[in-house]
Image (tube, rainbow, N blue to C red; front, side, top):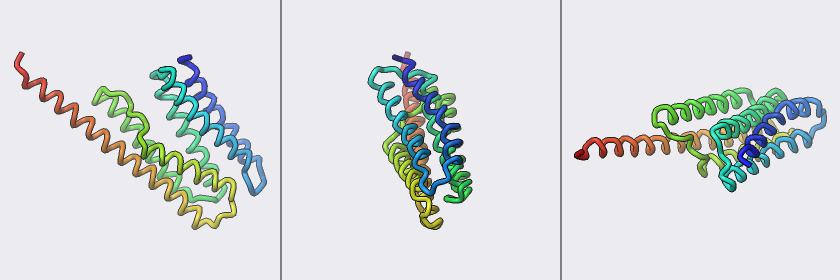
Length: 190
């Protein structure tokens, strides 16, 4: 059972090239099939997370695969809708920079604090949900005026940046607590 969540994450990564192919093959105004593929990917993310927690099937590999698969799919969706002219490319760039900062933060937490990656917090989950809703809306209703589409994706990106801020705050508290624990042990007599 320990490998099932990882298999689901790999399945989600395999959906990425399928999404790209279907997205650009679908010439209709409503991108229903690509949206369905994106929804399946999002649902599989919920399922693998549930299984990993329910059956205590989390692994080091899974802690890498799961967020990587998520970021790969969401970045792919953004790039596709940007290529389609629905959102501006700067939105993709901002989202990618935020993800790079999150990855660097994860490495720092692991290396410096010798701590496990922090699980998704409520702000991160809300940002992900809003991002999913915005992207699916933009794929299904492609005739939304560009100014509104830009506003929608900007709001979703703002939430992801706020979630980055909440992770930085959690990391700062983690580091402060670690430093307090270390200084407390150093002052204790042998």
